Image 1 (cartoon, protein in one colour):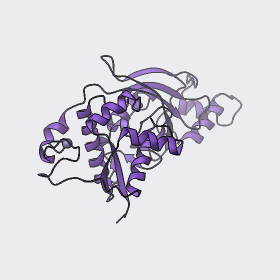
Image 2: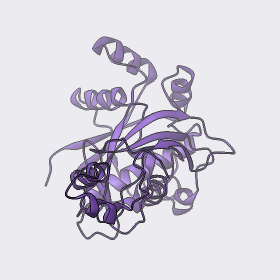
Image 3: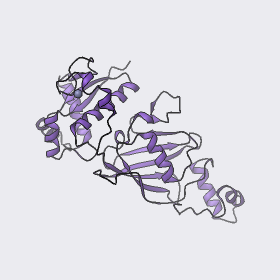
Image 4: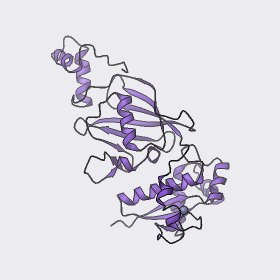
Amino acid sequence: MSATVYQMAYFLRDQYEAAWERGLLNATSYRDHGDYRRENEQTMRALAARSTTAIRVMRLNVTDLLAYAQREGKDPAGRQTRLDFAGWLHKAGHTGELWPPERNAACWCGSGGKYKKCCGNAGFLAVEPADPASLVLRIELDGITPRVWRRVAIPSNTPLDQVHLMFQEAMGWHDQHMYAFETHTHTIIDPRSDSGEATADGERLVSIATQPGATFTYVYDFGDHWTHTVTVEEIRPGGADNTFTILDGEGACPPEDTGGAARHQYLLDALADPSSPDHDEAVDQLGADFQPAKAR
Ligand SMILES: [Zn+2]
């Protein structure tokens, strides 16, 4: 049993509007306060499902946040600054609101309504947010020269099991093996796995791709263990054309089941060198017309 407490940094409606006006939020945040509350409720549910950590909602005040950021020399618009400020409030003696409230108790969000009729309501939780951001991601396969990479745009509210299928299509894999997303703090795994970790059908892309420059790892095939470094390059406001798009890329995806990055690199080198003792095997495995630098 962990004694740690997770502080959910939260803006009441008027403070949320003030935070937008001060430029403290970016396109990964929903513009609508209802969508923002829904996302927070879903995040806390996902967190509760994968750990025994106590969850408290810490209400942030824009004026105090700005003062804290200035005092600590932190970026006032940074997500981590909000989390750090929530942690600081807790250490300073603010207890916040314990989550989840009783069904008939006042909702954690400060609306004044009962939890069961507000953020705990199944109908409220089922609504799809209207205007998610478009996240531009660079996916690069680790350990291969010439580089194998793709640039894609994906709506921020896409569940990670769908993101997996998009990555498969973009890279050129054939979805024949299990996968995992790994962040600096946790692993989110293929729902077909029985590992007991958080599963990808319960989490959305925005939960691991939170700001430009953020990185995470996508692992495909726990045998060959192909690892891809994914970088959030840009966050664009959503809109009518906010759908999954492959924007750019270079390098040919390895065939399935060839043994992983080191083995694939060896085969690439043997393919390029007709005098190599393994040239014939490389032709056999990769195909005589395999073009390593071409995306398709
Ligand atoms: Zn509520």
